[in-house]
Structures are given as structure tokens and as C-alpha cells.
Image (cartoon, rainbow, N blue to C red; front, side, top):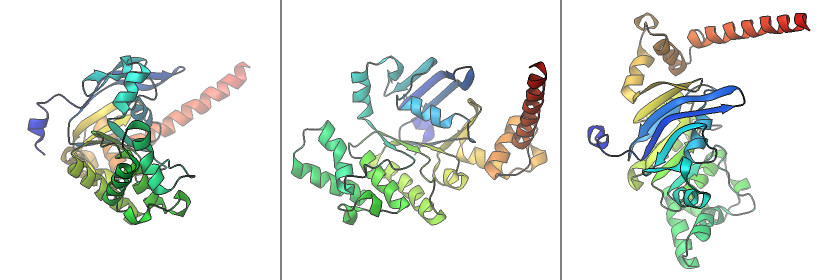
Length: 289
């Protein structure tokens, strides 16, 4: 993919100054990000950084306090529920658990979006289900129940359902979570293959760095609801491989620690300092009481 050409076109997803608070707690603070056709964008960060909340905004399940989210050139923050439903038919979601309906077979799970949102006859739906399951390597398991599947197979089945309506965007919520390294690597390769074969745009939320560096075209790092860096995989790889004393910028040092999983660094020191300050505040609160 030629990103120089891609970047000249209107982005498939455009996020502008996205802000969200839950009560007095800021969760997203002015997120701005463009995602282009055909690329795999990995959104990453530590627990509580806001990446899952960001994903929920992209799929329209929660509304921002401020800012705009454009999908296919339309601002979904201003759409009616009916209009948003039509937009949702153009993207698919792989949830962290797979989110299969346990009372339905694998094939019935994949068929569900086709039955709910198309006028296709039963024979055509059956053919479509077989095609989608073949794409994820599960065609021979169509009659199994979700309880009979391994964790990796559940992810594959969830992905088959996510592509049932031939979406233009695929959203992935922690696709490697809970999987062993070999199964995780297989899911990574499936994400890459489907993105290329189906010519879709993929947005992957993850904190698994091996997976991120395998699949990403570009990466976005969040920290406390703020974008620290957006760049190519090679740019992040440079930070990952840099010696600690090479980086003078604190944000780059923080990114490096996260990418490497180092025990010591600005993330650790910040948490220790925060815990200490909170501990002192609790002592003062009890004294005032």
C-alpha cells in the first residue's frame, strides 16, 4: 500500500478533537486522528489510557462531550439512530470475547446479520455463511456450538460474523486477549490477510506489543486520554530499540518503556508518585475529619 497516495484521499475515519469525561474524570482529551482506506491502524496504550472508550466512540455506542467522528464522510455524532444503524452495516466488530450467541451454532451466528439486515433467501445465506467461514478456516465447524470451540476458534467465528455483511471497516477489540502465543500469531496473520483480501480498513485496539508490531501499518499511542504519538510501525520500532539515554523527550521515554515492557521508567515512576500523593491525601482527609 502506498501511504503517500492514500493520505491524499479523504480518510475513511476522521476524528477531530474528541473529548469525553465520566463525571469529573477526563477519559479522552482532544483526540485527533485520521485513518485511511486499506490500512491497519493499531491503537495502543496501558490499562485506563482510554483506548476502549475511544473504540466505543468510533462504533457509535457512546457519544462524546465534544468533537466530531466522521465515518465515510458523515459525522456520526449528529446522526439519528436510524441513520447510525445504516452506517453500522458498513463496518464489522470483533469483540474481545468473540461475543457469540451460545444458543446458536457457529453457522447460525454468522448467518444472523444476513437474516436481520438483508432480503437474501435461505440458500444464498447458507452459501454466504460457508464463504465467510472458509475465509477464517472454520467451514467444517459450522454446526458446532460455541461451547465446543477453543478460544482461538471463537475469535475466528466472531470474525466470520463481523465480515458477514462485507464491511468496509473492521474494528478489533483486543483480538489476542486470552490466547496462547501460537493462536495469537494465527489471529494476527488472519487480520492481515482479511484486510488485504477484502480491501477493508482495520482498526485494532490492543496492548499486546508483539501483535501490534506484526500487523500495524501505523500506530497511535494513547496515555491518559491523550495522543502521545501517531506514526508508522518503523517510527515506533525506532523508539522501541533506542537506548534509554538516547531519548531526551519524556513522552518518547514513556512510549519506549511501554513498547519494551520495561519495569523501570517514567510510567512506573509516575504511578509510584501518584500512589504516594494519594496516600498522603487520605491521611490529611482523615485528620480533617
